[in-house]
Length: 299
Ligand code: AMP
Image 1 (cartoon, rainbow, N blue to C red):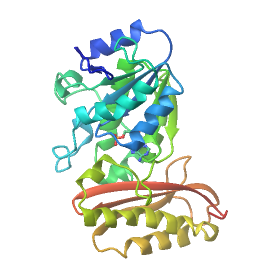
Image 2 (image 1 turned 30 degrees about the vertical axis):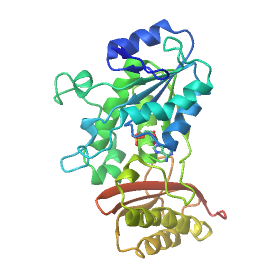
Image 3 (image 1 turned 90 degrees about the horizontal axis):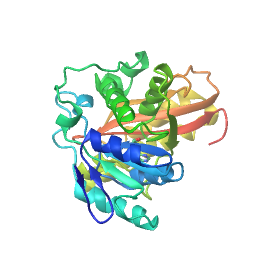
Image 4 (image 1 turned 180 degrees about the vertical axis):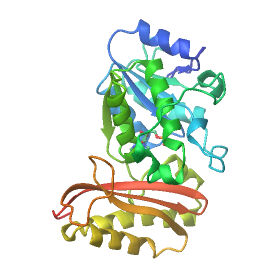
C-alpha cells in the first residue's frame, strides 16, 4: 500500500519498500525511528540526504524492545504530524512527486513486522548489552537489534544513520553490523538539544512543565562531570552525582564514565577519550543523555 500525501509517501508493507528500493537508481539511506519526530530525527534525515539518493525513514514503535511495565502503551504515536515534520525537507529538494520523492516513510503495522507474534528468531546482544540501559531494561537491546536487523534486510540501505544520543545503541548496532557482516555503513549524528541544553527526545512530550525544568538536571550533571575532565574519572563521577542530587524530582538510574572502545566503565586513572553517560527518571519518564570528553584534557 502506498498512501500518498502531497509530499511524503507512506509505505506500510515490506513488499512496497522492497519494490520502491528496487525501482530506484542510486543509493539508499535508512533512518530508523519510533516516530514522534523532533529536530534530532530531522537532523538525521538531513544527514542521510547528504549521503544517499533515497532516504527511507522507518517509523515503528517496536514492541520487542519494550519490557513489561514500560511505556509501550503511552509512547507518542503521531504519524500525520511526522509527515508534516518531514514535508519541508522534501519540498526543499524539488522532488515532491511521490514516484521520485527522495524521502519515503516506512510505517508498518506490528503484524507486518511480526506476523508470527514475538516467538521469533532474535539477535542477541553481546555482554555489554546487559549493562546500563540493558540492566534497567532487560531484553531491550535484543529487541532493538532484532528490529534493526530486520529493517536493514528490508530496505537494504547503503547507509544507516543513528543519533549519538543513544550511545549504547550505536555501539551495539556497530558491533552487530561487524559481527554479522552486514554490508552497510553506519553514520552517527551528534545529539541535538533544545537551547537550554535538554537533549531532544520523543519522551520529552510526556513531561509536565515542572518535570521539563527538572529534566535539565541530566545535562547539568553531564556538564559538571565533563568540567572535571582534567581531574580524572573519580572527580567527574562525584561532580555528576552531586549535580543530580540537587533536584528531588530526579531519580538517578546510573551516571558513569565509559570507554567508547568497549563501552565499559573506565579505570580511575583512565586518560583519553571517554563518554559520560547518564539515565534518570523524571516523574514517570525515563530519560538518557551522554557527553563525549577527553579525560586529562580541559573541557
Ligand atoms: P527514537 O525515535 O528515539 O528511537 O530515535 C531514532 C533515532 O534518532 C535514533 O538513532 C536516536 O539516537 C536518534 N535521536 C533521538 N533523539 C536525538 C537527538 N536529540 N539528537 C540526535 N539524534 C537523536
